[in-house]
Amino acid sequence: MSGWPGGGVVRMRTGRLVVGTVLVGSMLGGCGSSPAPKAAAPSTVAGVGKVTVASDGAQQVTIQTQDDYVFTPKQFTVKPGRVRLTVVNVATQLTHNFRFTPGKGPEEITAGIPLLAPGERKTIEFSVTKPGAYGFECSFHIQLGQVGTMTVSG
Image (cartoon, rainbow, N blue to C red; front, side):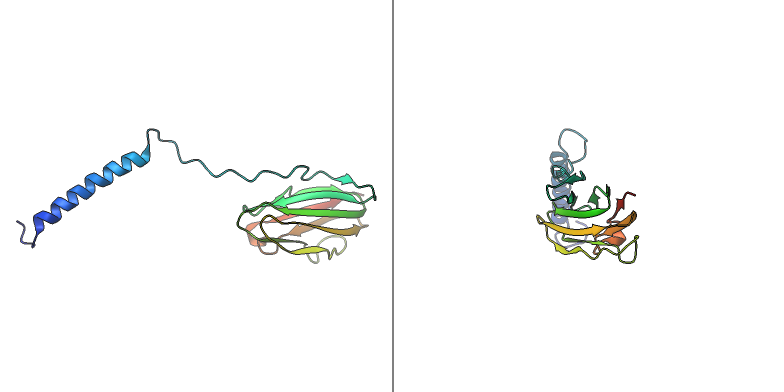
């Protein structure tokens, strides 16, 4: 033996461990070498990004957010007038919010959604009169790029 008490036993266990690890690794690897499938992306809510006019004359648009720190779509265009904006959070884990970027845009829009939990849908209404680009964001995830733009045509 090697001078270690029970050294032969240790070597034998190590050998079995190596063989066991190789066998388990082979079984886990499967027959092919393709990577594990990625989780399916959340489906897009019907009508997302399409601006329509309601019977009361308000323009309606729905955008969505999810677990990947984006708004879908990240840009949409409306005409001057009343806007009814719905934000749907199809995330399974992340809570978001929605606000127009303070101090940016031709006029201030104070309507916003302070908290939007996974699975929630909330609607805000506001009026815009000045054409131009109005930035919006999830203030929780600005640094991760969760921003977009509403354009008011002229």
